[in-house]
Length: 605
Ligand code: GCB
Image (tube, rainbow, N blue to C red; front, side):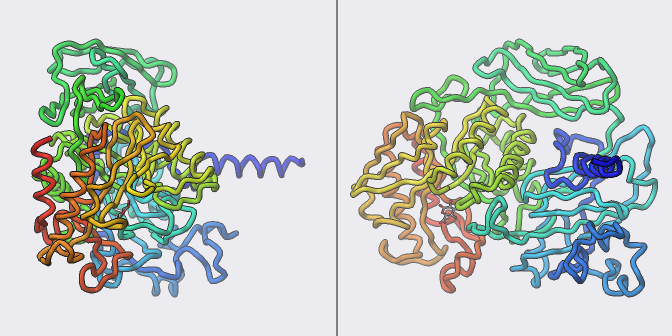
């Protein structure tokens, strides 16, 4: 190879490795809300761009890759030609609230699936001794991020956080950030084109400019050691560190104060013996103040300590066998349509679960807001957390796997200190094939090796032979729970027949039913045979609970679902109007009859 070619190759490689245009951005900073930060929430101007005009030239080539290296219309707003500026000028465009999906904020966007540009100005007083990171809680689905006319990178995945370091790009005074968001569904993405929820697009979670010292605490894990409730173990990771910095971890209420020196990689690992600790549980959701400080930085968190494991058919929380009294929920506010926008929305949802008598929730079918997990910690709700490996993923596509893996590990990294999370789920109702078994099996292994202190599960499917319901999906062998979705009385059989069924579950593991349910329009009444009536849903719940209670090893359930939710698949104009009606609570907050059946059942468990 000639020298210039090698040089070119090196440049290309450096470019690729620098992650500038990497779709899976770098690991995010732990505990974003505990940081010194400038909130970029609020009103952002937007341009609806169904033809992707700001990104593709008239030959459909991305501007990013043209020879001029211009890098897109919005890479260099100030240099746009007069004619271009006349057609694309954010100044006179309307605004959307961030965080928030676009579908619920502009009637033109209710069903919109495509590209939309966001822009926001902000001011910073910079300081040379600081570093700056632009952090997004979540953007659905693909985002291209530009700061002051420079492209920072691309991110894919609608529910996990990502960030870009912008220390050398943010300027004293006025700055502007532009984000192109595309929520077009694609077969090879995660999730794929077919889901049963609304494809809310946009910047759906907080945007922050995080300010840190040059050397800062980027990550930490402070948890009980696996299988040992007398030792807190974990790690602290510095970024931008000098050699052998000293670090202190304090848990004042436990009289813990320990000093360490970081190793050559800026890392400290520790094990600290403890006594007289109150373990976290739904009855006593005790959280301890944990403070970590380095020479230049400090961060505090509230962390609960508990153990979780299975023993035969039991689930053991802190040495006690428990029953998971749960309910499934989406990240959606039915009252003010759209994604949950803030702490108030999230508290409302979790409080409804508590009103039902729950000690456990399934946060389906993707990673929920970090605030949701912090509230679950505080309110004493155990959590099944999940990634959107849903239905018919492209099992043989290596990029698709990389994407799923990234969403899984990002969620684990973000939430590893949350006591509420007891289960990582690697997917939902995926069809059994050899390719799927490899894909999902690998996800199970990755989840386990990233976090060996929690249980690993997936929502499997059932088969029926006469009056026997079998669960024999081989993936179950790799999982800690026998969990499956089962819609007796609704998608198969008749409510009245349910008590005749029995189960043949091939695994000697705790059984946690991940879904069952039935649709009902709140306020519509009829007899038990009238579909969509509250009475019909009520009967299915009564008979389901009678049927399930006979399962040896039943250790919990998350019926589908807490509240009615929007779905493009649910078209019945009389009863659905694009709402999945399986909620126990309506979209106006009205509790249906079945709510009280489940509440009564949980009160006796
Ligand atoms: C399921 C899916 C869930 C759907 C539900 C339904 O099995 O896991 O996402 O919304 O059924 O209502 O059919």
